[in-house]
Amino acid sequence: SSSGPLTGRHVLVTAGPTYEPLDPVRFIGNRSSGKQGYAIAAAAARLGARVTLVAGPTALPDPKGVATVHVETAREMFDAVDAALPADIAVFAAAVADWRAASVEPEKIKKGEDGPPQLRLVENPDILKTIASRGFGRPPLVIGFAAETGNAVALGSKKLASKGADWIVANDVSPERGIFGGDHNEVHVIRRDGVESWPALSKEDVALRLMRAAAEHVGASHRN
Ligand code: PMT
Image 1 (cartoon, protein in one colour):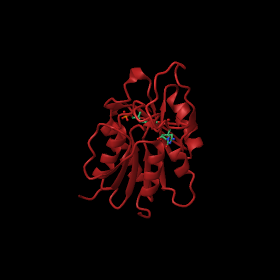
Image 2 (spheres, protein in one colour):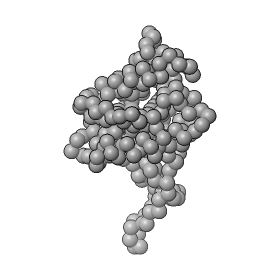
Image 3 (cartoon, rainbow, N blue to C red):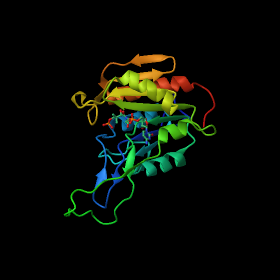
Image 4 (tube, rainbow, N blue to C red):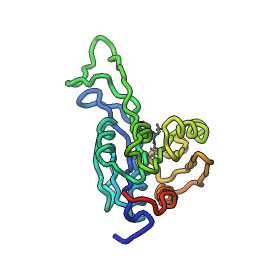
């Protein structure tokens, strides 16, 4: 591949939903298609990076020139991310399930006379927060996403601090906006020193713009 502003860099990207099983046939999931994260992985490769994409279940083909690791659950995603480090830039675009069932039934849960089953949930590991708060081995540029249905800038700014990310890409995922599963996105890039609101763009263009900004940010410093 030809050289570009990310040549010599390792970029790690998470994408897609996670599926958290309840029993052998049912799971808790969400509406992420993986399109935004896959586009980021492809854009980073196009700019010359070595790219690892850790993807939850999606219907998308693996991006060309990208090492793609397929996972299903949040815990599997965490392990795959950990195994792929170190990275110069880490982008957490996956819609990771915050909770999973406290116990997974080994057989299909039967519809019985006792009424619907009571689900008990436990918290999943927060991949972004864990990696961003590491001292040793923290990627120099950690980019998180924030999927909100309220004020994306206000809520995303809170996540910048609570998750310890360098940048947060906030998007309003209210159903009428068609972001989940759609081909376009309208994002606010939140940094400690201010917010840039980008116009509605294709997910490919959001990805390219984001990876160009990331390349500029990491500049010509040490390469992993
Ligand atoms: O996949 P598409 O259909 O293209 O849609 C794109 C998208 C809407 C999924 C994407 O643009 C997006 O917003 N991704 C983040 C979705 C999300 O779950 O955001 P959140 O606000 O719940 O989480 C905040 C951040 O923490 C995210 O970077 C998330 O990856 C990360 N996280 C969350 C929970 C967890 N257990 N581990 C994490 O790493």
